[in-house]
Amino acid sequence: MKARIPKHREFIISIDEKEEPRHQECWDKLNQIVKDYQKQGKSVYTETFIEDNEEKVKALQQEYKFSYTIEER
Image (tube, rainbow, N blue to C red; front, side):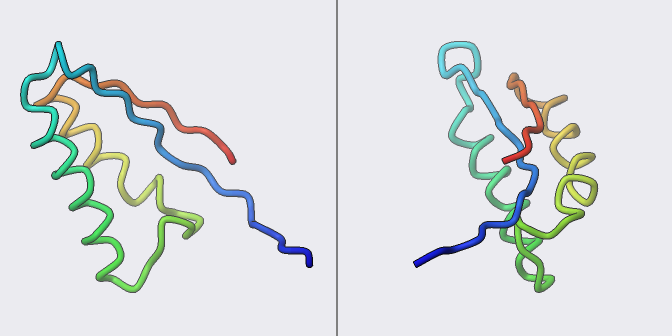
């Protein structure tokens, strides 16, 4: 059986638990971004997922200490 998985880009987020004591709170907010996006009938595989959500991720980055990159898979 063959399955073709479409290429997509994704956020790779790194939170150092020692530097960010509120890391769980941050993960919860990041996961909420995904849930809200899915409520719009979209998926993390939607071509514009990064563009639609990068400003929200950057806003959280101002509040919490974490880094992220965008990788193509």
